[in-house]
Image 1 (cartoon, rainbow, N blue to C red):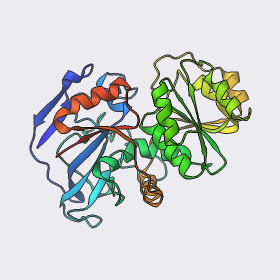
Image 2: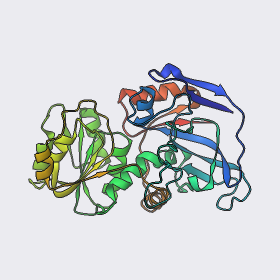
Image 3: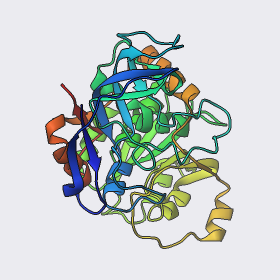
Length: 337
């Protein structure tokens, strides 16, 4: 089979195609013919050597994929040849507390990922696709879709009458917009692009604030809620946006901390954090049980993931470069023929 490996960090030139033996499923495993993978910001961070956790060079990158089962190992009862499946982002986090292996299992960082033609995985590390989704659409769910789902559910699920703030127009943010609107919540978005602002409104955002033109966008968001603030901030920016998120969140609301898109780090004002009255919840994508819940929600609502552009397997570097440019709205996908 053919597989991409990231031979070193620092440049997309290190993403090289290799010829490798076809894997064979062992006991309890299935062999998946990969049909599509989707990229996340973490994939670019690993390439650039900016991933905040351990990353090992020489691995097959990418955490998210969908495909079909082409062989099963001894003892496999949950899946059959021909089943359409996707990989769980955390292959051994089935539910409850995160396992101690969470870092070692990390696709593309400490273990081989999915940017390859075939992959053998445990039957517990995959779930079935919603029938209405293509392989390309389903490949967007394991990380971005599930992260948004986890951010909106949790101890206090978002429901009709709540207000959600999303940042930008990447995969997690567009999923959060769609999922929040599906339950009747109001969504406010931020962006730096007038063109993207129009796209976000078309997807259902009630208001969009340009964070470049309005550096104090947190106060502006609060004004849009009549001074109350938003019930949930889907915080993907990290150190450069958390200060404004604290200004935007309602008393008793929640900041769901997800990403680290921004590089600047002005620090957090402790008293601002204390006086916000908000809770701060760190999101690490989610477990397999939650991924199954997401697939049911997608099937019930008819939600269609937003795909910005799809690339062929041979053009994988171009897909990474497009994501790195920040020009996308939604997800960037690579298709394997």
